Length: 558
Image 1 (cartoon, rainbow, N blue to C red):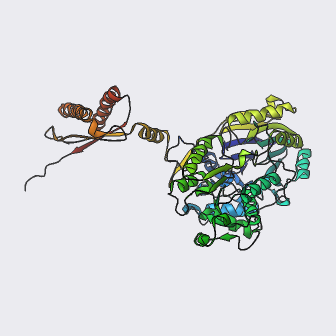
Image 2: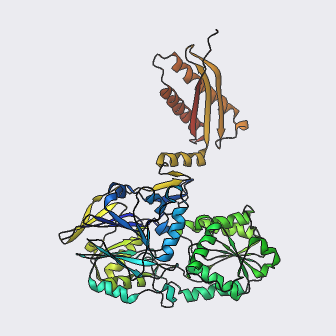
Image 3: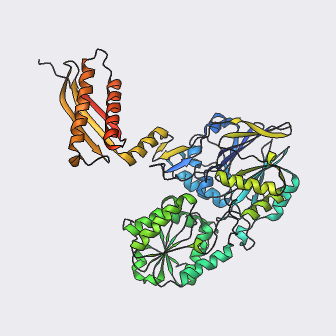
């Protein structure tokens, strides 16, 4: 009897940051290692990654990291993991190349090179488990699902997937392989829930390609296409449509060029003609109706770059009258407001906006029918919905129950919750640390809730600074309190507030100087508390209060 654990370190009750552990006896298999982009309330945060504490504590038992595809939600956190835990990384050819680009761009992992290329026919025997793979359909080539074969049955992780009968050979699902895995006996299925609550059928990629072509060929001015850099299927469709419409393509951004050149080198992306892509400098040689600008933005996020283009702050492109901005990515719920604001800015600049989602339901993730087909093919004993917010996981659980899986065998987990299969039964078995680790510049995990709270207060109510110089030996104030603020009140029209605040600070400082138990920390705390009460009474705002107390020392005359 094998002891098996399944632990999601990310990707549950959230969008992105996919990372799951399948533990068989003393071997740990890490399935994906992704990041997510921050919501608006995470002020100043670049990306969010999983908590690697469990893997750091059990590094000797980690057999490797197994990647399903080359998107940031599957490979983005890899450099941060490898800087702490040096373990082998397995993935398909394109996925490994994109992972190498990602890893080599980080100072701590530039020299890491323990990558292993696998395909749908690869089987790796690790002793307690055998790892194999199966092809899936997603918006990037070389996408796979992962099968962990154990003595108790298979543990299957689908990765991102959908079923598309019109998919080209490079993107086709291996249905026979899915059926084969299901017939072997699946103990637990970890399945993509991103589209579980949306009953609207997802358009086939053939329909999407025609929609892209129709939009591009009839526009008479310049076209700026916004796409996610790693959505190679969409980029291929845009390149094909540009060629058919006699337009030249201009790429903006080093990230996009690297991804496209890597995909072309591996024959995962085809240029319809050798002269289709031109440089920024060559744009002036062509009229507007002969140009298509492909914008993917920093880190593959194109919407913010569109805002810069519309505001005239983009490094090379400005939106002008007659331009069409064509958004070929479907925004998440969290991004819908940002996209709406971006549309408004583009229209103010004279451009027009069209979204691919205006006419089609476009997604790289399966709809409810696809999800139920996957469950029917696998016939799992236990079902673990992953990759989605709680409502999506719950909708997926209901879909599984509809086709015969009892609710007692369905586990909607939270990050860090441990599922253990022991004595022929799966059950919850405690938790492990799985907090959000926030990346801000070069800082990894040094931004916590307190810092974020202060940033939020600064953004809402500003900062209020009180500076005073004292001589503790002589128990006197050398320089009276100077009050200043930023983002709180307009100083010139709030003189009475400033004067009264200065008096409060002076009174508190004098009181502390006379005290026998003088403490710097208590002095500053008293200033914060008294000023906070006074300012709230006067303004109903709570700025960050920063007392700066300096001590003057007299030099002895020699």
